[in-house]
Every structure is written in structure tokens, then in C-alpha cells.
Length: 217
Image (cartoon, rainbow, N blue to C red; front, side, top):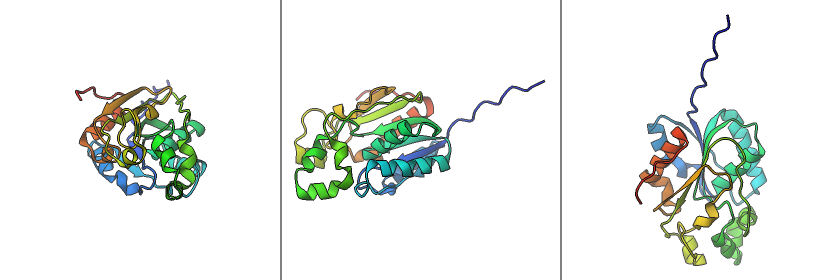
């Protein structure tokens, strides 16, 4: 007589990926809140401006395979790295996926920043990621959530004069992913997402259930 297969254990590991120019330790405040909720966090770092997206995808894929099944959370450019890695490397076992303030459809702030030599130098190999009309699709079965900010405080707003709702760096319409499970907009700025208790509560809820907790703005 064959015994029934044991149910799969829930995924508890979380890979956290920061944005352009940011060291992996910038994700530490969010990681601490996730750890308090029972998750095991792995911080992934990469040289955002020094190499093209393909190089970051290769490194994150190796990191993910060594980690094993995990949820993924990417902030800003880190969201692009996560999205590209999991779409291209479909054998990677993942749980739920979250993008925080990720300009997956290009970045007006980035394009205007690139008009000047210092800006082009600072953007480095990432400059091609911010082109207008960039497509963003999620075709895997795992839930993909998006958290966008609506508090327009940030360097991008000063440089680019962003029109419409934004988090001060990324416009709301730049965060849309075709095939995403859901998106929530919170009154936070681009950089403060990572230290916001409100954002952390939504991250924990989505990683645990695949859904955001609806709340009043």
C-alpha cells in the first residue's frame, strides 16, 4: 500500500533585490520585518550601472538556484532584474513575486537624466532599460504583485518634472505589468518604500497569501 505524498512545505525563503546604485544592505529594514514574520531573507547585490541587465540576470539565476525555492522581492531596477530572471530562467523554483516601485515600462526620469553627460555616466549600462514603450509581461503561473507609490518626493521629480501620479522617481503608469495578479498604490515615496511599515505589511500579506490587504489610503 502506497502512502499519500506529504504536502509541500510553504516557501519561507525570500530573495531581496535592491535598485540601481543601492547596496544590498538597503534592503535590511524590510528584511528585518520579514524575518519577524517568519521569513528567511537572502540579500542579493549587483553592480547596477557597471553591467547590462543580462549580466545581472545570470548572477541572480545562479544565486536563486543555490538558494532553492524562494519568494522574490525587487525594488526599483531590482524589480526589472527579478522579472527578467524569472521569465528567462523558467526552471527556477519560486513562490510569490513582488515588485516595489519598479519602472518596468521605462522611466521618464531616467531618460531625462540621460540627456546630460553626468547622468549618462551615473546610469552607465542601465541606460537602455529606461526607454519609452518598454514592454513588461509576466507569463509564469506564480502570483506577481506590484506595489507603487503615490507620494511625489524624490530626485526624479526635481530633474524630470514628472507629470501625473508618481513616487517622485517612477510614474504610476511605468509600474504596470501585463499578467500581474494585482497592484496596490500606497502614499509612499520611492526610497522610503524600503523603511515603510505600511509597505512591509503589504509585502508580508502578499508573500503569505498571494493577495494584498485592502486598506484606506
